[in-house]
Each structure stands twice: as structure tokens, then as C-alpha cells.
Figure 1: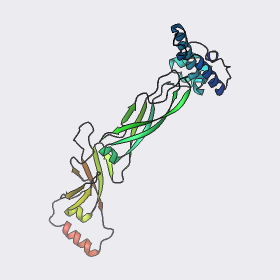
Figure 2: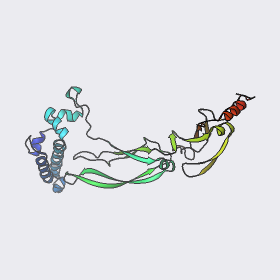
Figure 3: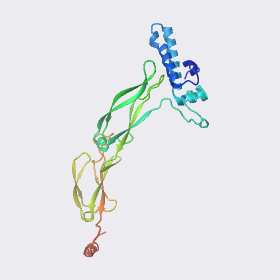
Figure 4: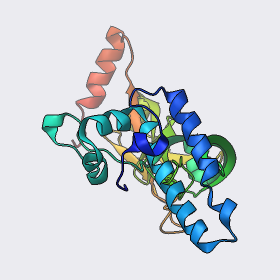
Amino acid sequence: MGAGDYYKILKVKRDATDEEVKRAYRSLAMKWHPDKNLEDPLRKEESEAKFKQVAEAYNVLSDPKKRQIYDLYGHYPLNSQRFSKEQGYGIMKEAVVVESSLTCTLLELYKGCKKKLKVSRTVPDEFGVPKSVEEILKIDIKPGWKKGTKITFPGKGNQEPGGAATDLIFVLDERPHDIFKRDGNDLVVIQKILLVEALIGKTFNLTTLDGRDLTIQVTDIVRPGFELMVPNEGMPISKEPGKKGNLRIKFDIMFPSRLSTQQKSDIRRILLSDVDY
């Protein structure tokens, strides 16, 4: 920040309203705009300095928080960009990075996709007066990207007069899937199975996340906590093209709600016969 009293620079009183500050700034910005003095180098240099000073003053006085800090502590806290805990302001950043959530389905993260987003941001016009502009941003989601992945668009955030435009960052979020759950690079699915099937085995079809049919054979006894792993049927690994994680099948064993006396007797006879445990 430059030196000087911001109120005197904008030629307003200390109790000036926001509208009075804005009107004063517009008038002075038009007066000292560098493009008005292109033919005279000395005059151009003076205009640039004045214009920068005016924009700096407006940047502070148009922001209620910065204005309050300036009224209480002057230039120092704004220059240092921080305040003591005793002052109760913590750390202040003049160029805040804007982060927005970008939600994708699990299938979009599996296959990859392209998204177009309309964003609105505030930038100064030719006179330094803030205005809103809209832009369409294209985002290329790569197969296998994970929740928390950040996509940065440098200089596509808001811009204050006299300052640089901030970065706009999108943070990937994942919408829960009805059937599959992601665990790192693996996909996890719950398969219901009857108790008798858990004991003698079962063959069933499973539709993958991308719509293919897999034939799954269960030959082992399905005990509590048992998982069947299908290699290379999980999520794509973004840093290792061509490779995927595993598909892990967990089983929900469905026990009968009731057994007859004869059924209990038969089960007891079978299970207590010569069976290796």
C-alpha cells in the first residue's frame, strides 16, 4: 500500500457513505486514467501514479472490513496483512483464492468426462469500477480422479481495483452411488447370498459400474468377513494409464427367519457329521 490519507486521496469525509466513496472514485479514476495522457510521457507517468493511488484508496474504503481496520489502525495492518490476536482480527488475505465444489458421479469419475461451467466474477472496468462478467470454463475430468482433486484456473477469480485477479479452484466431490462404493482405487459392492449358498457355493451375474456383465463363481465357504476379489475391475488409476484397482465383493448372508423341527434335526445331523472345521 502507498502512503497518504485515503479519505483525502478520494476527497471525501471520513463519514462518507459507500455511494459517496464510489462517486468520488469514478470521477477521479476518469480524471487520472493513464490512457488520457498517452502523448505526454511525464503527464502519463503522473497519471499512472495518481490512478494507482486512487484505486488503492478505493480498494480499502469500498470494503467495510478493510475500511474499519484502516480507520482503527491506519496503513500498517493492511500493509502487513495481519493483525494481532489481541486486536481480534486474525490474518487477513487481500488475494483470497476462491474454491468451489464440483460434484461428479462415480461413473463420471470412472469413465472421465468433460464439463462446462458458467462462472461469474467481479473485475474492474477501464476506469477501475467493479463490474460483473460471466465466462464459460471447460473442465476435463480424467478417469480415476479422486474426491478432493483440485482443478485450478489461474486468474479466473475476482479482481479488485489495483490488485491481481485471484485464482479459481474447483475441488472434486463424489456423489454416492446406489450400489458401488469407492475405496481408494478399489470398488466395493455388497452381494446378498442365502445361507445354503454361502455353504455350498453359488454362481451369479454382476453388472459392473460401466454396464458390463461379469459371471462370478463362489466356490469357497463364505464366512463372516469373507471378500471375493476380482482383479482389474476397480477404478482406473489416473497416474498409471491402463491399470485399475480391484473389485471387492462383500457378502450379506441371509439367514432363514424360522426352521421346522425336522429342518433343525437335518442341519444338526449334517453339520455334526464328519466335516473338517
